[in-house]
Image (cartoon, rainbow, N blue to C red; front, side, top):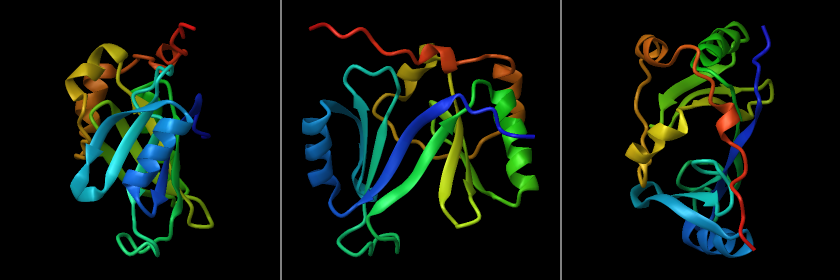
Length: 170
C-alpha cells in the first residue's frame, strides 16, 4: 500500500559550517532559530511567517564531511502523513519494501527513516497537534517511539490541516 503523504514537511542539509549556514538562511529567508544542538553542530530553523515547527535542519560536517563521513549536501527530505495510524501503516510499507532503516521520536514529530533503491535517505513523519508543541520548544529530541502508546493516545487525530501559513503583516 502506498504511503498517503500530504506534503513535504522539511529538509535537512549537511553543511560545512552550521554557524555560517545559519547566518545565511536566517538572512536569506528571514528564518528564525528554533533549536541548536552544539555537540551535534546542528541548527533547526523555521520560516518566520510559516506555521511548521521547523522547515530546515542544518548539520555541520566540515569541509569534506569528516563528522559523518558524508560530504555537504542533502541529507534527507521529510514527507508528512496526516495521522499516527498512517505512520504505522507506512512502517509496514517500508518494511515490505526492504527500505526501513530507522525510527525515532523528536518530540513534536514521530519519524520513520527509509532509503530508496539508490540509497538516498528520506523521512516519513507525523506531527503532534499544534497544541502540544510548546512542551518541546528549544529542544532537539531523539528517542525511541512506542507505537502502541502513540496509537492509544493519538489514533484518528489528523494534524496536516493545522499547517496553514501564518498571516503575515506587511
